[in-house]
Length: 350
Picture 1 (cartoon, rainbow, N blue to C red):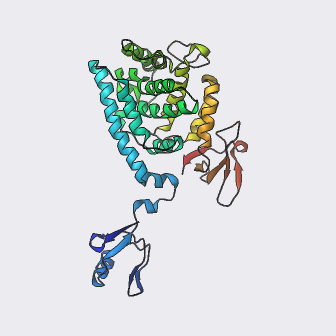
Picture 2: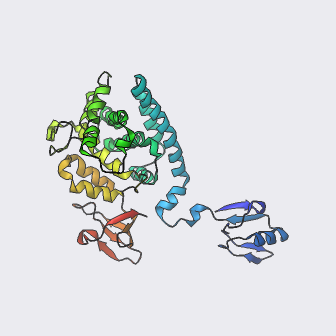
Picture 3: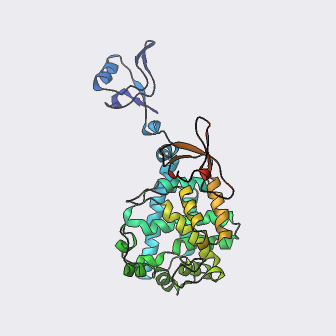
């Protein structure tokens, strides 16, 4: 709520507090003002009035978050740093201008101070609608931000953590050489089109081959679509043949791809993403994936979710062996174990 001068009032505004004149309530809190009521306040010489703001009408955590000053700062800083990142990458791709690692890390550090925890970052990303023309750049920037937490959680050395962050910035650079319409089409790709897309790791590696980037970053660029079971690309290698940095980035890439909203679909919730990762666990390094999924799942405790039957519940307990199917609790203190109700799905964060 905010207090405004009577002269700033407009029809349609909602009172946040009673308007009182000589101990008499002229208009009660919650009144939607009309021009006649505003004129009446003028006759009574009412000078200041408390009205409701958009955030006051928000009923869910995510609605309130979108109106919060913290999210607005994140959103603004994200837009500014996205443009700085885009310029660095564009100049490298089109002019061959070298990218000092510190400039990318400066972007990471500028963003890192806008959120306090990974759960807060995931909340912000869930609500961030990227510009449709910047999807590749947006994807990599967000991947670098998440990679920083992965490095912390897995207790990497500072050098390795910085390499993982930089890998997040670089790993999809090959996509910048492919047509935008091919990458972000909502239609199913033809086999020929898909083969072109599958070339982007090799394209990216070739683009960066004359730089002094560390082998860890170069491996992540080339191998981030390889899978532990050999089902990936471009070389169908498997297991320990895949660099551990590429195995990390494979998880980051998959998570961010699903967590980011697109013009044609909403973002997937963290628990929906974890369910997909659980189903595909053979494709990823389980020793890396399981502790990362547990961290993300634990961060959802206390959050509200909507199920496929339209009911709303709070995440109460995370199952130790089925992170995506938690035990839920509602306002009536009823308990629902999603692991025992396969017919129900989480469809939205509230």
